[in-house]
Length: 103
Image (cartoon, rainbow, N blue to C red; front, side, top):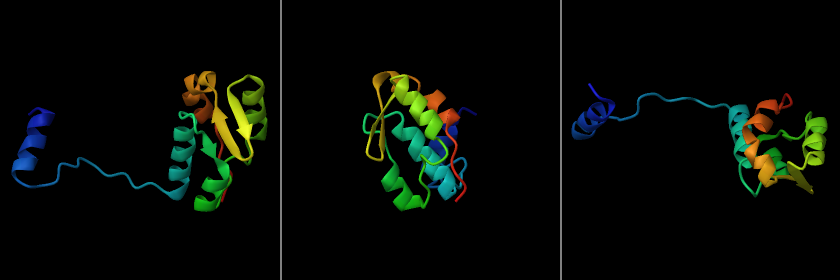
């Protein structure tokens, strides 16, 4: 049976169309926020994320952040890390290299 047909049958039967649910920890959510921030012009607001999750996402990444800034992939304004256009093009790579400190 095609996926859309299962979905349609669920709708008509008024049952859930959700196939599965993933429970994310605060650490997972923090990493997701960092990855999303690296893909947006507004960047990663480390202060806001520390306030929300109790972990500064920049801690432990100083060498990488400095290297990315030197490479022209990242701008630092206060505690906000903003990717440049070149940085956004490398967002997946930057996110893969990101290490979160232990809480």
